[in-house]
Length: 272
Ligand SMILES: [Zn+2]
Ligand SMILES: [Zn+2]
Ligand SMILES: [Zn+2]
Image 1 (tube, rainbow, N blue to C red):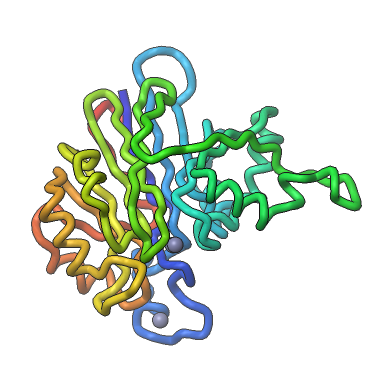
Image 2: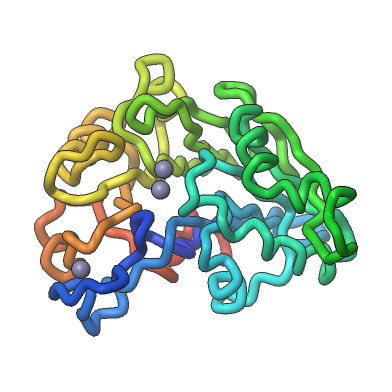
């Protein structure tokens, strides 16, 4: 059995370094201060035959480099948290999985997010209108609903309602072989009905943008308050801006709380 989460990108929407910024973090030579736009890969395998299952949460603009860096050459689907540019603009690169796997790619999102994907990528979803026939991703869209659990190859996936400012978005909880992880990016508030879905977690990944207040993201302090309330086994902060210098902040975090960084692999037991 193996169950792991790979941080593909841990930065905020502009990435770190940001274009045109020469601050200490944007020019840092610590690789943990280099943050692609946010995405994770959830990977698990039971003891039976068959491939290791791999699901992407969001398709960041750097998706191509992220897939190459981690040699990810097949996926079992993509789940979208919401429709912001930093979470969806890698969608076009899903066509490589069509080519390599010789099958359509399943994507899962709330109806509102699927509608905005159709609006932002009309050439993908209505290819019959394209002037030239061209190689666009072949995707099969599935609707998600908060609280409605899904079984993907023996793991239970639970979409969790989160608030990103006024925008309702999704986090995901994944339960596999008695272990659990939740990924809650781009959140500024957790509605009361979502807390029961975040109980008894081994690992919580949560938005921790920066120190100063932001209308649509948790600050470091607010993220720590949420962790205190949710009480996961361990927690990792993500979606970090250039205000966060990894080596400076991490030693100050409470026990069991860590900063994520691009390429970090979190193992949840098993034989790897
Ligand atoms: Zn974002
Ligand atoms: Zn900077
Ligand atoms: Zn967002």
